[in-house]
Length: 376
Ligand SMILES: *Cc1c(COP(=O)(O)O)cnc(C)c1O
Image 1 (tube, rainbow, N blue to C red):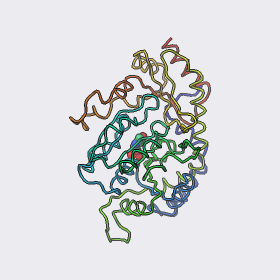
Image 2 (cartoon, rainbow, N blue to C red):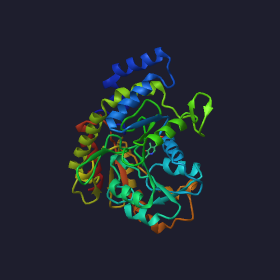
Image 3 (cartoon, helix red, strand yellow):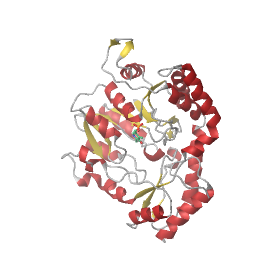
Image 4 (cartoon, rainbow, N blue to C red):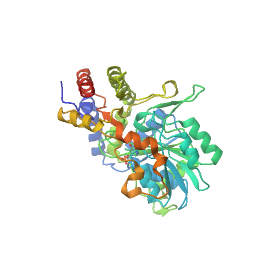
């Protein structure tokens, strides 16, 4: 058995090594390092993959969220609702822009933002909702869009973890996660489902005016060189990363299928155990692209299990150990602990097993046998 990695970027690279090396060298020889044709090509290919009118590449997934919020023109004090159980980027950019984050609880099965918690959190100052499609599974978008319409709110989807996932409406219509709200954002951090060999990100929208604003903001508010119409930032996807991503995009569906296959094998071996809850999937209403394969451990021994795995050289992740409302940087007296019953519980229970595109059956067997050996 090969050594188990949490994310096997080397194994994935080996399979596309020649193509990637050729493409990177071509970009270097061209010396079009900034906004070269590679960026435009990747943009076009991602637009057609996602079936979305506009993709605006940028430097990383956190910038993508910040730029999305800048583009909808909120004022300091405006409130933005976002889940309490996610990576810190969402709350961080809300605060950086002088906006007020309103963190809400999650749904216990999917780990995604809880619909009734959104409804309870809406005030006159609420201007936007940022659902996060966590761990590879789209949030409850139909309900979120309905709430947003009723209350005239913007919806920005943080799709850093679910690129390629489909959201299926009740009538059968499918859309790619990230293309449903007013704006969607993603990250090409190396371990993401579509990972660059460095940082990268992108913003999606169907709306021509928003696209125009977003394109300005990513490039210092310039539409014509040295004429600044908007206050912007410098946030570009560099040409070398774009040339790598353009190749890897061809494999995104295969990568997501490999993740799904690994997830099915994990679930097959771990289901029906009294102390293990395997990931929930809303089945016919969405697809899951398993950015993470996250279990809930129900007997209170999650940390002991983690130690046991560690001693046997099995990597794991605890995403996320501390809810955002308890982080030093984001504390606020608007929150009561009773608002976060689900998050406060799941942070004690979750553990993510190795998940990537190169997992072998013997590795999955060893991991699941070890988990069960400890819990039985
Ligand atoms: C990775 C991630 C981000 C941030 O992406 P970067 O490219 O690292 O800035 C934002 N939100 C979520 C949910 C993420 O997983």
